[in-house]
Length: 172
Image (cartoon, rainbow, N blue to C red):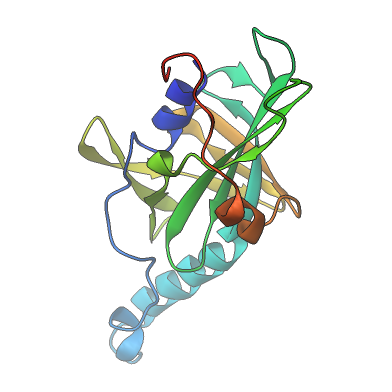
């Protein structure tokens, strides 16, 4: 169902790479690597702008929120943490028995920002570098046909505290 879209965006179950570039090794020699330091500063600026919760508006040509077959809607969120984790959340509304925020941890992963507005990710078990665009409160990842808007609710803490998504149909 919609989890397949979530899996695509997060690169299946895992984004490869290390924690985000904190410029500790590349920026240490400012005299001979001043151009690299500029890239690291820009990378750190993007890291700071990326950290937070993003409400998905479009993913793989699907517009959110999505109408659920049993009634109600589903909204996807991604939280990019300062320590390089990408958390996934789904919010269900208008369904009598499943309303609420859920954190399907199987889709959580890591991300690594690279110079030049690029991010390292995995698709089908293969490491893939994708471009992204941050503009104010807007995030776009064209390779995933992904668009999102930064929000203040839910918070990273709320996503972390949310229960796993309930499975009452065999786990699709």
